[in-house]
Amino acid sequence: MVTDVEYILKASEKLGYDVDGLLRDAVNMFLTANKEFREKIAVELYKDDRISLGKASEIAGLSYENMKGLLKENNILIRRGPESAEELKEKAEKLLSML
Image (cartoon, rainbow, N blue to C red):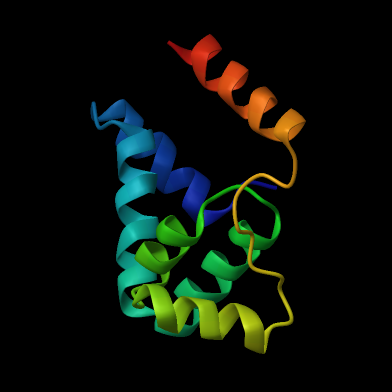
């Protein structure tokens, strides 16, 4: 079943619009207008180790300290750097491979 959103995206693409850009803008507008959802997304991404604390605070629109408080309220352990020399080495190798 094709949804209204799919019709809009297909029509937009036919008209020459960048569908990825359109979706990105739509999500950004939704996040801007919905503070609670923005905070939930930031918590979820941080919990899944997809983003840093700084990026989570940026997405949530909170200060670094307020983001830490939100994570504590949600019983999420705040990561404080690598837990071992081996983990640090793995992260350094991963970064080097991205260059």
